[in-house]
Length: 114
Length: 112
Image (cartoon, rainbow over all chains, first blue to last red; front, side, top):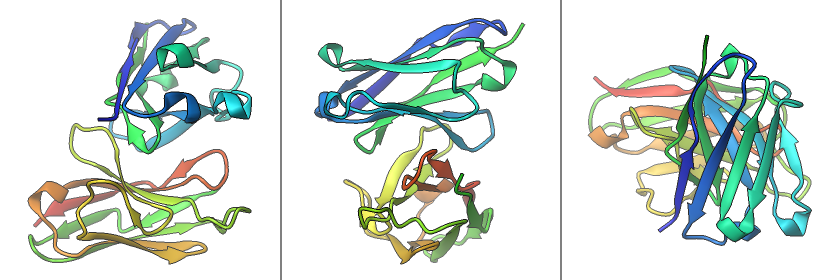
């Protein structure tokens, strides 16, 4: 059974940092690209970024709204993808989902507020 | 960025009746590899999104056959042949042909 489990969300002040994790199981994580998508409360879906596999040089891509502030990485030995979020803004408040191999995690809530 | 436009935004449906959602992209979704990376997602209340259809018309694992996708180029449709109570939720079209991935605004399917 494929599982994606996000963790690391919470309350952070504007300008702060947070690192999310996405633990994967049930598929060949090392061969899969992993994406992060976010959803503000009551709103639609917004793609955040992705990281490709080692075979594709771990290439990353980001949405313009987060480029330069967010960094996606992965540890294939732990079957885990990460989203490092710096210089957080109130508009980054959302549920953050990881998705890979066509599956989606349950999400983790990030709240940026003073 | 490719803009995805869904219609309608709300679809009240009688149980057992069909439902249809349209999605139009601002440019062709045909990739240079020949594939069209148009997917449909379902988000039930309080749940994460779930993949229903990928590459226009391919049902994902475990998706009932009452769901079907069609279309080409810039115009796509999701059909539910007979709506069941468990189909209530918001449906999104999504393109993965070009970065950034972009999503439609979502169509809320509810029971009359």
